[in-house]
Image (tube, rainbow, N blue to C red; front, side):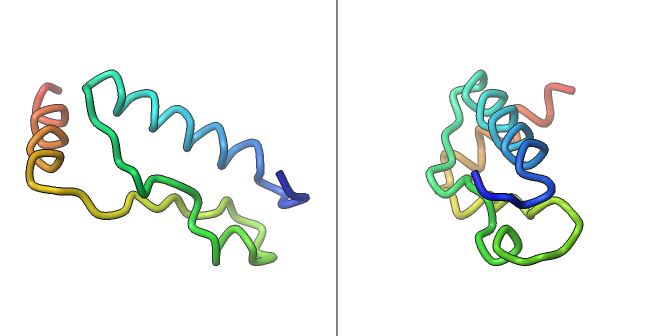
Length: 68
């Protein structure tokens, strides 16, 4: 971790999202902190990059969201 003001918040959100996706059998290999926003000195939490996914993963995401 760095000394970014929102380290804990950003990493917690990232880890919870990764776990929630995994619970549905979904893996987004590019899921990570958005480095340019993480490296900036803004006083807001860094962005989370979801990344690209294939058609099968897009369908899994849609099904998981449709469950609600």
